[in-house]
Length: 124
Image (cartoon, rainbow, N blue to C red; front, side, top):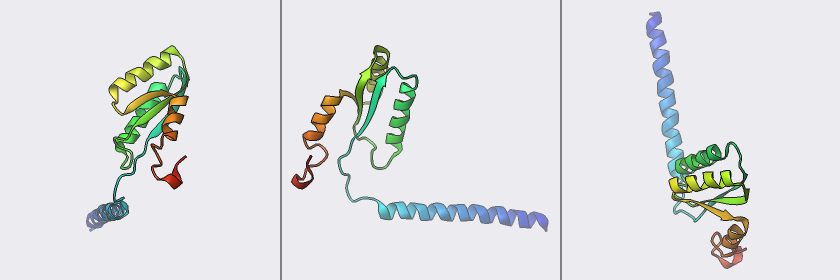
């Protein structure tokens, strides 16, 4: 008798978890966007940070896993990289095609070109 109660509790919990997952998937489906707006991500990098490669890999993994930013360009903004940091960024750029290394001025020029805001009332 006791074992049946334990199994019923376990099955009930698993059923509840499954129901929650189904509800979450329905919520995501209902809240999805109609189209994909252009976006890009930028990450300032400087020096020869010990965790630079880890930070870049972590960012790229999050981009690949996200629903809105997958496949979008990612810019590493050079804020004073040393040669070791530059080498790390170059290796990461070879590994991830959507990753680009640019100077601060290049990013500002990209923003001013209207990459983000195409409509006149929203332009920078």
